Length: 277
Image (cartoon, rainbow, N blue to C red; front, side, top):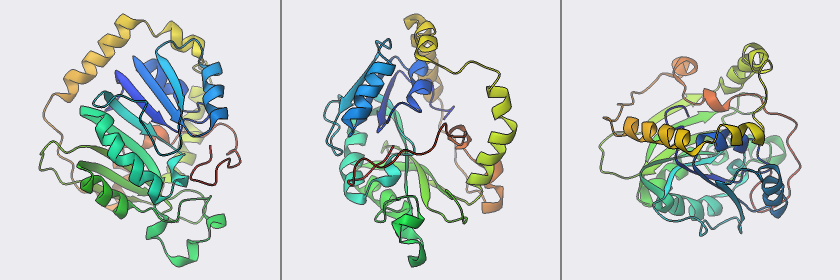
């Protein structure tokens, strides 16, 4: 994520109670969080009340109509859309491409269960992962919707080294002839455990980013400067993405930023439609 942050405008889909929001707010000038749970929307509105550049919107789980087209630098969703079935993503992805500006990107964490063996189809064994979603049908949907896949990383999540999930980075189709990069990484959880063991002690020595910290570092001039620097960096020539062998993934991965240990246990599901947070 360091390649796309800071970002002037961020849209977060299904932020829940703000687990990742607190890290995104200091890195944006405009932030919108959209969630199907009214409880979560109200919780974030209360927690981040002093973040005047942020707003939290309640939706129906399918629509992004509250967000202006061609206005977003980064669409982000992690550990939420893994519970969304294909009909939800079929609704969201075309809208995501409409909301992105011409240099914007989206980072989505979604299920890969439609691509694994039948022995794992029981949702009780896969952390309530959506059973109709896969790396391949999301890639096909993105292309059909007028976008392009930049990179997809199939990962394990939970016990058993099962490729339950996929991390997909996408953008609008700008005519570039770059092939998407596909990674198959069944060491994601090992990497997460390693980060927890060796990196977390350093983080514990620093204050957790609260909304007070967010506001104190949210000076408009500084944020504009950061956003401008990011825009200039993106205007450079695109980086050619090369295939990476499975045994090299741990050294080549781009998703280490989101592999940090989660705080607290996963909450119980509130919607049978598609998500828990």
